[in-house]
Length: 65
Image (tube, rainbow, N blue to C red; front, side, top):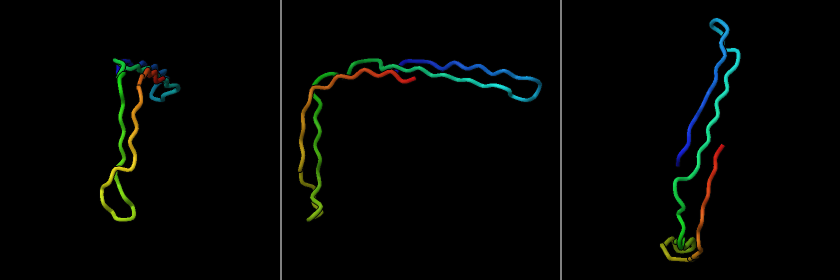
């Protein structure tokens, strides 16, 4: 992720009167392509058995403020 943080503090003597900070982040790349997911467990026997498998085409874009 790429981004940055900026802040502002206003002081009057030794007392902080006001403080503001903002951060903005965005993703560096697009993790596109086929995404796979498999879930393994059998609650009845306690053994590891695959009970779910999915495939999907993934695309991602993120902006955190």
